[in-house]
Length: 207
Length: 296
Image 1 (cartoon, rainbow over the protein chains, first blue to last red):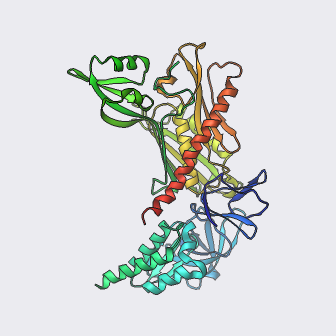
Image 2 (tube, rainbow over the protein chains, first blue to last red):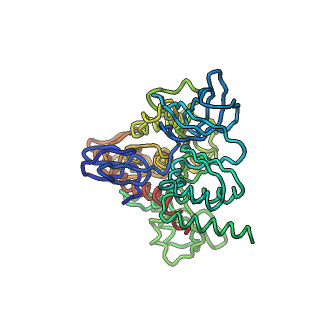
Image 3 (cartoon, rainbow over the protein chains, first blue to last red):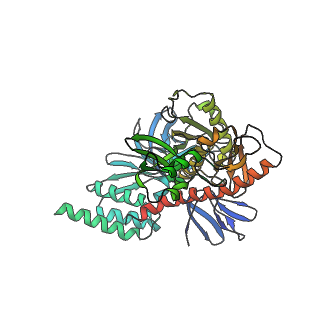
């Protein structure tokens, strides 16, 4: 059972392992942020609903090249922290303003990220949403993302840092659907709502 | 002794409203209204009941006279006295504060950053139009000091060590002022910081307690002083920031004379009232998500 909590709310008084965004005080497990709290398999955690992106190892991200240096590129990650992309991780030559999709290889002690396996994305549209809502856009086992792509025929790439790149014909409908997911990320029954929304929108365009 | 607006000594002001997530550009924000709801009553000039009310309570005021009639402002705690009168208007008088939180974001200037924790910056400002006489828009000695003590009060509540090499900026803008603006700003800042997703131990709550009277001997301990009370012949004002769950205090300012035992009594009252205020903060945050639900 997930419950909406605010900072200072007691999640449980049982002995559990501590997951992200909780702290323990006098035997009580307490939420640090606004989010959905759950205790699962003996781990208490809060899934945050607000906040900026913090780089994490293994995250797929979409960045923008903001500086070109001799050993590589500085990449803006829509975060307080920058990513560094070494030359050998990008097959072609990039320049200022290029949008790249990459994976975070390592994060150092002050949270700056080293990137790998990068590709430049050309054409299409880039939108930014609240990074904490990205898991809902992807869905369980990519179910929501597959649904969006199948229904609209748009190619969608999602970065964990809140940036989404879209390429294809019905970009506007896909964008609207994504913004709707962002707005209602904490509610249930989203899949049905999104299906209905896209079908209605596409139906209007045909008519 | 009666309070100027008819409140009981242990009552907060009658209207306290907070809304979370009001500014689009900010990572987190809050709007707070903290004051008293006024009813404007139209009555005859020689109405004895209203005249005696005006003498007894400072907050009951004639604002306009017109022929045989006068228009009188009556604060909410005294509404039971004006049943049956013609009510012309109803509006809020008090503190109005917007708070915006940005971050954690890249520090500018860069040399201010720390590799151990985020740097918190707090900027308290009063709009030129927030007070009866125009206030210079330049940050004055008072605002700079309030910004500093507010920042220090919040630093120990936030988990700043989770964001090295960044800054978190808090901007508190007072749009309308009626005593207790620093605590109003801090109460709103607690909600705005939570709305920005900054990890914290608890939502900090701020309020003032004090002791007021016409002389030192007849002074009584009250909570949440308004402007009339702050200007009384004997007035001691003590703004506080409270961590409600642990009942800790991270800001305490006071000047004036108190008797032995007064401080204990005031702190006890402040913590009790702080918990009430904390409920309003929590509801504000939860309401932000219910607002979306109700669109269906």
